Image (tube, rainbow, N blue to C red; front, side, top):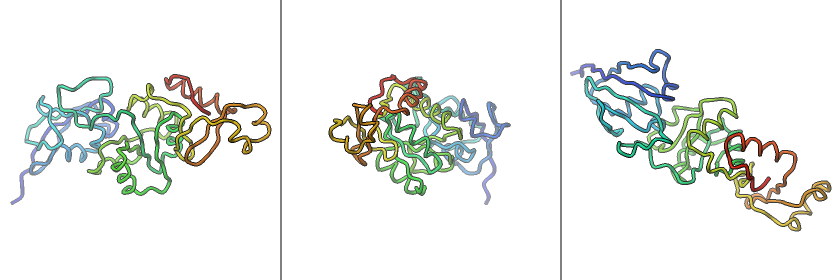
Length: 256
């Protein structure tokens, strides 16, 4: 015997409306269902990945993702709260990482380099499959950044964010704001191509690898511990330092 169709009412707040069609944004709308689906399944069926949600209220009461919808439920869904303490209610995301690290999908190579420039441990390969991306995120407790919102609906994804913009500077701003990163910048401490840690090195150890002009004009150098790439405060330094300062960092780059 077929189960009768039932209806609950949903409303999504703030940036969660980015995932919704225009007629459902900033408004209550009906959600029809059969049986007793979980509120997590309903939220993702509407189009919002669970990783973007931090709080769900049903009829004014905080619930977890396992709550089963009932006819007439009024469901309010809220995004991640970085600056507001919602400890008294049920926070749905894992506790924020003390020092966040990231893994990015194949569409975000430029963003990966920029996050490394800011000092964040950022894994990127241009041939990652979804399974490889999710597996590595699980093993290393990394936050997945992706342009594919459907990837974030995967049940094994605990931490992730849909990158809304296609423009690099806007992408960086999104992520810095979303994860409250500005106070954690450690500029120029990661190798841009390989993500290895960059540390100071005596000039005497690298001068045989330097162009003659660089050897004559510069005296402070850093080197990647993984690939051996050597850095100095060349013409790119001021440009990248200005980017860091614009984003709200401390303005004290440790390497170039």
